[in-house]
Amino acid sequence: MRTRRGLCYPRADVFVEKLVVKRRDFAGDNMACRKRQRFSPEIAGKSDLFDALPDDLVISILCKLSSTARCPSDFVNVLISCKRLNRLALHSMVLSKASPKMFAIQAKNWSDSAHRFLKSCADAGNVEACYTLGMIRFYCLQNRGSGASLMAKAAISSHAPALYSLAVIQFNGSGGTKNDKDLRAGVALCARAAFLGHIDALRELGHCLQDGYGVRQNIAEGRRFLVQANARELAAVLSSTAASNIPTRSWLTWSPHPIPHPNHRHPTVPGCPLLSDFGCNVPAPEAHPASRFLAEWFSARGGMPGPGLRLCSHVGCGRPETRKHEFRRCSVCGAVNYCSRACQALDWKLRHKAECAPVERWLDEEGDGGEGNGPVDGNDDIIAES
Image (tube, rainbow, N blue to C red; front, top):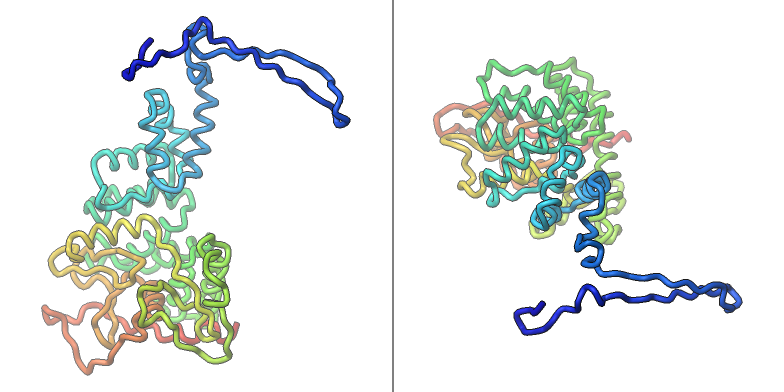
């Protein structure tokens, strides 16, 4: 058989190579000599060795690949390899074990095929796919019922981000009116997510307890949850691979007095001051793929989710309002607004504390003050008694 360049492939009937394998003991003497024949795939009935592998073995390999994928392209490259891999890679067992990074789809690449893929993963029981697709449907595609049901499906499986997102929806009455708020349900969902170790839920629950929002006020217990949130965030940064490339001394310092964070005026170096009363400043935590998708989706649309609607001012959130004046906003300057107390607390330390300027009086464009709440100034002494 000739190629396009005129070269000839070796004939299958003569392509037989004898490989002599000699084994020696530790002293160097010959122990045995055996011969092993190695044939080309064309000899054994002109069949591919890959086709001889059982489907169970290939599915097991694909499950390992999907669970360790670092980006969507790692899995897409398998789908376009051959028809058999395309068929087996879409097996429900493979999709159910897909890693969260496999769903890190960019908003500019959103398409019907990406929607179908997420739907297939959600139908296979992948809780990360349920949460990601639920967030996209609820906030981006404005399919409130389907999005909430997908997030509830993930929450039933004890998915902490889904529980926290449902808590935010209950706190704000998202998708409905102001009368649809259910503070007690929000606190219950937030407590469940906090029990699972979700950092934002711990912070939200701590502020709810301190303010008596949806639950009986308990300042000491609220402070304990805030301390636990900071400790978990610090532990997450220390164990992350991102922190390995950053000298620890550059962001982890100790001082008995609060120190200003150097990144307030330099946004090119991302950072989030943690335990700032004692001088501990750590890199900003990585946002969830669903939150990044929301931020990219609305950023491509001018940063406006709709007429008179606003986005959460915390850079790592991306949630939009579903009705006017849904989010709380800073009662000092009125320039920022937040979907939750956790986002308000994080953005206060990360950025807004250095930018907030008191205003004697401010009104909304429509003349309504909205549902504003003051900044969480208590963040400054979160761990004063740790």
